[in-house]
Image 1 (cartoon, rainbow, N blue to C red):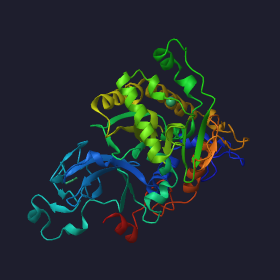
Image 2: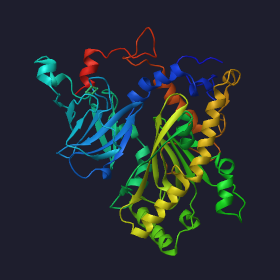
Image 3: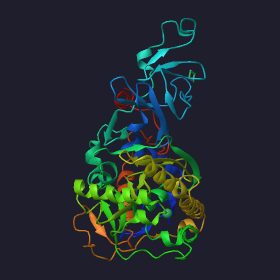
Image 4: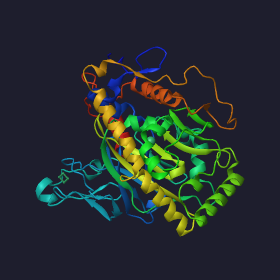
Length: 446
Ligand code: FES
Ligand SMILES: [Fe+2]
């Protein structure tokens, strides 16, 4: 099996996946430009910032960036790499700064990225260093959706709300369920693990099928009397334009099965009643939204109140940044209950998180074998089924729980992007970055 240029699929029906997309180092390098540099990428939640100078460091693809709050309340997103030798100018996770001073030779940048001071400049450079031309590279487009800050290096793709498209219908059930919205719990969990980032993103996009097997031991530990579970008969997978996908179940009061106190259960019940009045019942009380991925690498669990980004770290590694989001209107007891519930299941120490990460680790490792790499993977579940009519108000294409439609559509979107070389790729070696053209550099270095 050899990957046909720019396609994840190994067959014409697009139900088989070529395993090299999970391990090939050349494809990985191409992916950074063709997928990540051409998509809107989630950066941070606005509640992480309160005053000018507040910053948060993260990644866009493999590029480290600083999200920096400005005096006027806007955000600048700066490449966290000094223009002198490339050193990371800010090595903190978050904080407040008046300037970002590079630890290597001491070049100093304002919170807007401009080069403001150079040690011993007269002796070192005389008048020869043009400060205006040597600020930190700035992400040219930064936009927010209901508290979520995104950035893109691409000056040509549609605005963020168009990019999100109908995914906002479901995002609103998390971000805008009542008039106060959500806030991020203090601190962002970060951890590294083995595994190709796409395995995590595609699982969150559309894989309900794994739960009964992958999470069996955690399920038994939590509910010894049930000895695990079968998936409820009623549920859905939804595929949306742009490679976004999500899934969930028919209605049931999930918060009554999580060991919460009566106080917390009552509050959750009334929260969803209020949400139904605001947003209608389809995405609040008449269904339980569970898992989803906003293409390419932002995923979330509605019922565990978490969002996470799968940052690529080479073809066989990723770094996870995970947020616990909480309803602002919730009293302290509810916030604590939701935060602990997230932490027990889906933080670095979460039981379910560890279950999943083992699968991604060993899948990636096996996919790289000489023989294994030549055998395609089966992504055909539900390819011969019609739409699921049980959830008529949902936008997009709706299928049952037992469907890999979302994964197939995720890889269709990935293939569309991978089929077109990034202008900054060197023609001689697609994996090698060529210097940016003058125009591209102007767009990137604001
Ligand atoms: S690498 Fe930053 S000042 Fe030299
Ligand atoms: Fe899982």
